[in-house]
Image 1 (cartoon, rainbow, N blue to C red):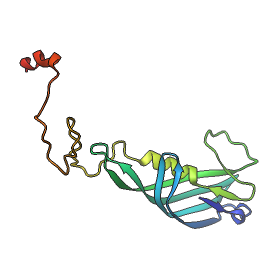
Image 2 (cartoon, rainbow, N blue to C red):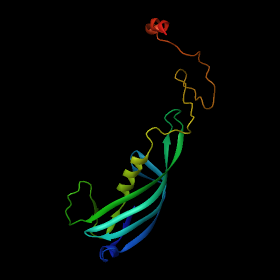
Image 3 (cartoon, rainbow, N blue to C red):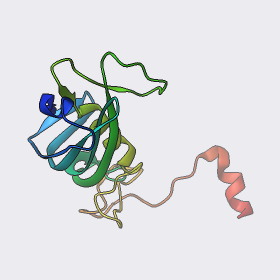
Image 4 (cartoon, one colour):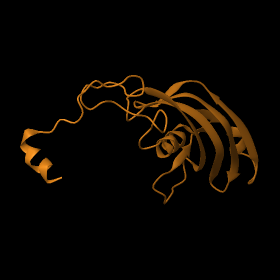
Amino acid sequence: MKYHLSHLVTASLGTRITVDVQEGAGALDKDLEIDFLQGKVQFTRVNNGIYAQGRLRTQIQLTCVRCLEPLSYPLDFEIAERYIFADQESLEEQVYLIAPDGTVDITEPVRQQIWVNLPLQPLCHPDCQGLCAQCGANLNYESCTCQGETIDPRFAVLKRLL
């Protein structure tokens, strides 16, 4: 997701350009694939670089943590990052550089924002029943024929205390 902004690099401070982001399916890293990426990013010429700010949306294929079924997860997020010229030094730890030809790559900030905004435990729907711990049946689609709770014989004595 690279954008050639050489005309903005030479522009006066405060000059802005808005870019429509329309990306198709692709991998942002080995464990993160998106179905699409859409939105707008505004690039502003600032002192020693370019400031990128935008609102984007995407859809990611995840797996439900209860039933292990695949699910499509829509995600809206914002990016706000500063890019500095390659010949400038920065005291900041995380720095994004403007390539010598004026190209700005927003892939890394997008990737980071997607990871930060993903749910810790994605569910296909809020009342997902999950899988049977005994036979592995998907309780959303079928009834389980297991005989209830089986207790480890070593803990049977404790069951009497309840």
